[in-house]
Image (cartoon, rainbow, N blue to C red; front, side, top):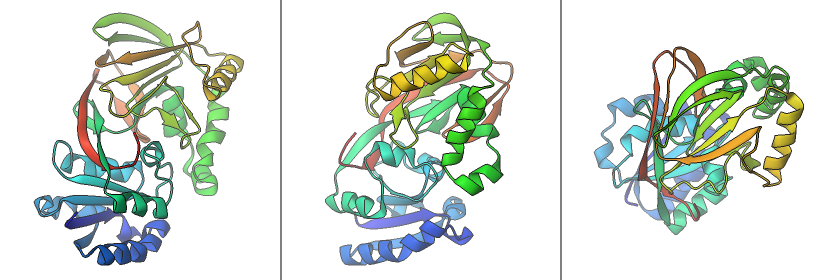
Length: 286
């Protein structure tokens, strides 16, 4: 680590990002490295070839904006979590500023997989149905009041409104028709920090997606499955299905979805590919 760029939304005055700035600056001065702070909106005007390390002060959305500059390069990503969810940081065992700086100080890095949805890179997951409703329809007023806990509240509300939809999919080159109330294709399948995961033995460097299929619109069956997931009692049954896949295609006319917590609307078919170990990150674990 010799030339470092620190990327965040500093100009918008995000409280944690601004608060962390002095501590990061002291850390890098002590390391005696060249560094520069930039706002996320300045990325297009930045010569990234000058830097070997990119520190992101933010959440999963900020990381996603930086991804195109890092995939399949020798640059190392350091994450200083200050977003709403921080799911990738949680998956990597980074849950605070002090932990982030200690991890960067050690210098240990690992390569992780990147998922692509119609050639758009993603670090976490793509959700349809119930998962997309929680992310895309949670009122901003609720998020402003309760923060990340707003999604938990919304999850209870939308669980009472479950609807199934038919999906024509190709998974591992096998065609199937799914009647599902929720369909998730995940690179990292952890939710609510690391509270639970919608996959069996999810890893960031195994070269596979974790596909989760929920086949019920009965709220009681959903809550029962959530309890089983939290107790690590995941298995395929009439309500849920877990699949490891290296290719997925979904026939689509129109859908509301989300990529890593960002609401999207699609009218074209959805094609999922994965690039194994294409992003280098500071972490002590995978």
